[in-house]
Length: 190
Ligand SMILES: *[C@@H]1O[C@H](CO)[C@@H](O)[C@H](O)[C@H]1NC(C)=O
Image (cartoon, rainbow, N blue to C red; front, side, top):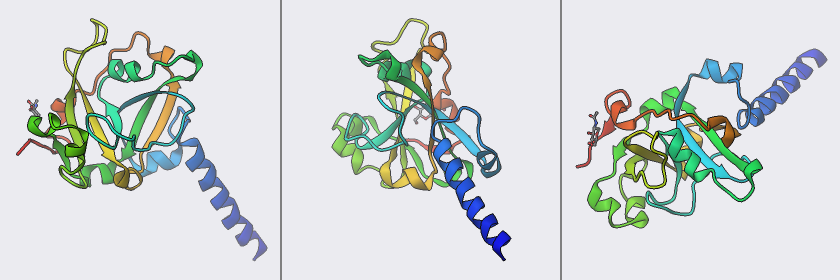
């Protein structure tokens, strides 16, 4: 009886460790591999690594911002303290990611600002182009971003694997979201 109890306690402890390390660990944990994870892009920031959370606002409103291109994430990973400049690899639960609605935000709504985007396609992950301003010449010709609303962050089991920005210095990788229209079933603007 006692051994079963300690086994249960140990399992919970292991789960806790796995959850905590998922945020910063480089190699995916066995739990993540079993669950099936989909790489959805890059998030750049300056500060202390933290779990994904929606920002206060921006072009796509109150969402957690993810870029398809390393170069775009690097732009947001620039702060006064280089030791706190991070580019993070963002993964989602594959099953939930395939289920969540996804939509390109129409240009007319983008031009109305973040508050207008907030009320567009409730429950959906939103996609939009981003300006190349400030990106190096070696950056992809076009860069894109997606936004995950706070309510979907937990459902999608988003994890953030953060590394020093300097590790990405010569990395110009991109997922190129438009090329994933069919694979991810991203809906075109109405
Ligand atoms: C993906 O969809 C967007 C929005 O409709 C469109 O602008 C883009 O050209 C599409 N890309 C491809 C490769 O089909």
